[in-house]
Every structure is written in structure tokens, then in C-alpha cells.
Length: 79
Image 1: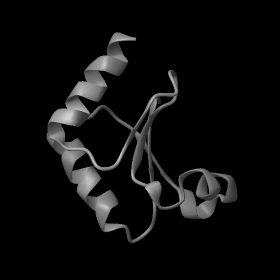
Image 2 (image 1 turned 90 degrees about the vertical axis):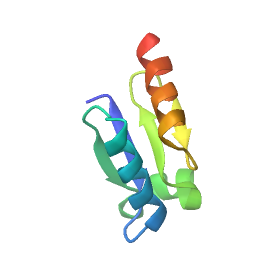
Image 3 (image 1 turned 45 degrees about the horizontal axis):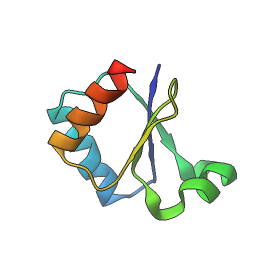
Image 4 (image 1 turned 180 degrees about the vertical axis):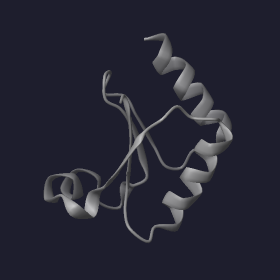
């Protein structure tokens, strides 16, 4: 899987991001909760949600909307 959504438990912004990704529609992705990993918590902290493309390392941090997410997906797929 090439896509990861970094998020936190009980995160209303993460819920909003999931709703946006459903509208794109986004390819399959893994959800990784940063609360469960000290290194991820140190890296992302309160910055979540962050959409990460594992192959390229590119990231899209919150806030984003449907248009921004689509543009990010197209640009990353073009790499």
C-alpha cells in the first residue's frame, strides 16, 4: 500500500479528512494512529491529519479540501 493517513484517536479534523478522502475518491490507504508510536508522535504531534505517499515521501498536511486532495493525488501519481 502506498498511502498512509496519519491521525489521532478522537480527532474531529481526522474525521473531516476521512470524509474528504471519501469524496475524491481516494485509493486504498492505511490509517496509522500517531498516539501509538513515540517517534510518530514526535514527528507529527498536533499536525495530524497528514496524508503520506510512502513511495515518494510526499505529504499533504491538514487543512485540505477535495480539490487540494485531488490535485495532490494527480501530482503524486505523475511522479
